[in-house]
Length: 291
Image (cartoon, rainbow, N blue to C red):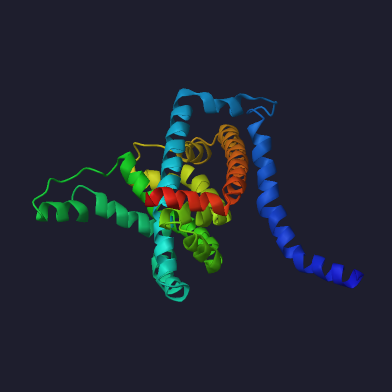
């Protein structure tokens, strides 16, 4: 027994060393820098700097971009996943492979491609003028940043939802249909509650990185629009103010952790409430819809 435990610890040691060296130690350094000033004295100024006008404005803008990106990804992911389920999991998986194929390309190249598409002399305006339609000015606007983050993080929402939906027993869905539930009722009462684990994973993987994606804001926002990630990056690289950059990072990290905890709790409660819907409720909704 001891040999087995010792073997497992030996196998886990590279991972533990990696975690300590590249996650825990850097995190401790960041937290320490966040609570010390240039002279090494304890301070809260770096933490409260998030409330400054410029920082707060960038933080609110980042929150809007992240929330909008998350909602759009959810609205796009579920119809696509349901369509993939309808054509069958084998063919759906094959189609999914081509949908995520662009992820294999370099991240910067993908964003630069969108920069070329959305620029005033880009492909989008060329197509519009060819159709005798007025040209649009999307480049260097919040809409351009939103397009960039949705394009880049959509697969991270779709894949967990696809996995969760593919694991739902077809018999459960057929039972709901046998009770008279239409497609929308089946989705709302059966598919959505059972796919909540995938939805929670997708929200986590989309909301958090889209809030701090400073590269997308730089390339598609033209440097005029700044996410909180841009402010943090500038403090570390250009201003060499590690204390302020660390303070903003810690403030953002605390906000994200609290948001994830609250969202997880609400989604968990919602899942239990929806799964508590009885067969009589589904019947009643189906009969009401028929009338």
